[in-house]
Amino acid sequence: MKHYNKMTRQSGMTLIELTVVLLVLIGLAGLMIPYVGGFVSKTHDSTGSDSLASLNSAIQRYDVQFLGQPAGYDSLMSSVTAGSGTVYKKLMNGDDTGTLDAKDYIKVVTVDAQSFTDVGIDNVMLMDDATSDATFAATASSTNLSGNVDLLALQVSGTCGMNDPMGCIADDAELGKILGRSVDTAANDYVIFGVGQESAMVGKTVSEAPVHFAKTGAMSAANKYNRILAVYAVPKVGCLVTATNVAFSTFYAAGATTTTTIMNEAGCTTADTAYDVPETVAGDQAAAGAIGTTWAGGMVQKARFVTTAMPMMVLEGLGGALASHYSSVDK
Image (cartoon, rainbow, N blue to C red):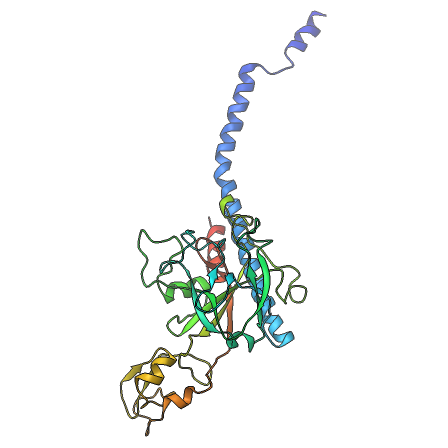
């Protein structure tokens, strides 16, 4: 009987043993916390790059199957009226102040809607600034595109300093690295749309409009717009273009061996009529033509799909997302 009682008393853990076990578990938890954070970051990067690649493919398939680009994109604007268009207030734009400036990675540009209607994008969704769900209930109504309209485009600042917004993009080389494509912001506007549930491709080349989820609660889908962006290149309004839709801003006068810079239609028609459009070979033009007649009726170029991107505090395109993913895999 005494032997039984002794064994019973010894079958449990002492307070010291329990304390040692708890200390070991706490130590292991402390070691694991950094790795858990890394797993979250890796999962975000991997999912983001997969979504960007899949959506890229879906837009290209739509173009092949339906002979045009999908209408019904989210405009990212609560108004697209030319000259007074207003940006959706719940976007992530680098400094998140709600007011765009020269250092943000987005800006408002005026474009000829025909550039988009000619490829099938004849209507877009206007955004709802008053919504309580910035991503899943972001739109208010549809609007047809016609004439000149204000839309949102990517922006390079020229320089980025220590006190500039997190998302500041210094130059074309940096933007090209983000998008994984060469860009020319002097000749083109890189207009962006959100791919929401109203997009014509939903149910055709993609089952649901994808969402990327931010890493912090303040930037979550409920608080900030987390849809993926479609990026389109459009020659600047009035910018000279070649027959192959390549925009440029310099050309040669009759017989000249140095180029003349002309950035827009107004400059072409008023600065000098002694230019023919376009001449890009030095001294190759025997006689000059009247540029004003060349511009008569407008010279609208079609929008061209470039790639997809994620609108975070720092813009992330497919090239950047893949780089982040493979960089984190090695760590």
